[in-house]
Every structure is written in C-alpha cells, then in structure tokens.
Amino acid sequence: MNFIYEPAEDSYLMSKVLENKIPKLLKQNSELKVLEIGCGSGIQLQTLKKLKVKNIFSCDINSNAVIHCKKLGFNCVKSNLFSEIKIKFDIIIFNPPYLPENKDEPKDSRIATTGGKQGSEIINKFLKQAKNHLNSDGKIFLLTSSLTKKINWQNFKKR
Image 1 (cartoon, rainbow, N blue to C red):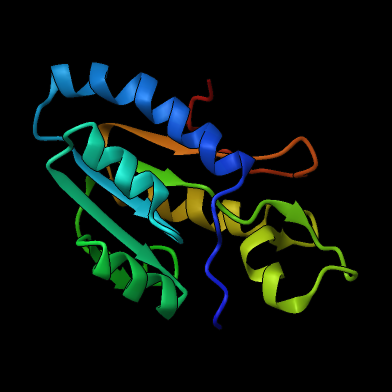
Image 2 (image 1 turned 45 degrees about the vertical axis):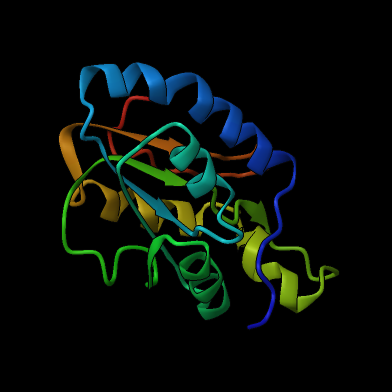
C-alpha cells in the first residue's frame, strides 16, 4: 500500500473545525489527550501542533502514512482503528473512508475513500470501538458524507 491520502476538501474542512473548536477545549483542559485515527498525510496533526496541543497521538493502517507522520515528528503507530491503542483520550479525530463502494474507482485509492458497500461499515466499527477509548466527557470529530448510509451512532450525541 503506497498511497497516502493527500489532503482534499474534507481534510481542509476538518482542519477548520479543529481550528475553531480546539482552542476552546484547551482553555477547559490544557492537557487534552488527542488521538487521530487514520492520520494519512498528517494535516490534522500539524493543525493540532499549531494550536499548541501537547498530547498528540496518531495511527494509520497504512505503513507509509505511519512512517511519513513519524518523519514529521509525531507519535504514530500502525493500527487498524484501535487495535494497537491501549489508552483513553479526550478527543478522537477521524476522517474515515466514508463513500459507498464504487467499482470504477481504482483499487489503490479505494482504501482511503471507500467505507464499504454502504459507506458506513468502517465508521460503524470505529464508533463501536471508540466508546472504549474515549474519556467520559470526551469528544469525537468525525467526517461523514450525505452519501454514507446506515451509520450506527452508538448513542453518541451528534452536532
């Protein structure tokens, strides 16, 4: 797997949301512990660093993304969602593959864009596992699409 997801519109949207929300959360807790699942190019990690978040952790299923983010100076491990994550966080960020399967899309890019037949299969696994890795008053920043069908929100409050 050589392809690292390059920042696109969804990445920039997530960065803007983080730039808006994280400073307020840091005022409440200057020691926020933040995890990004699927760090890819590291754009969100760089946004967090710019916002002066001290405790930044990340993971990706793609070895090349892990190597890339480590070279950028971030704490990053290879993990399939939370498989190698053993602690809890105040904030979990995930810009997942959220599009329904499209057989016309090249296989090498599908891993970064396709969330399963409905688009929600990876999101649903993430949400089911996330509750075990999120502090009681924690928050998840998760991107989805209007094309994504059948998301099981696991009793998380959405905004």
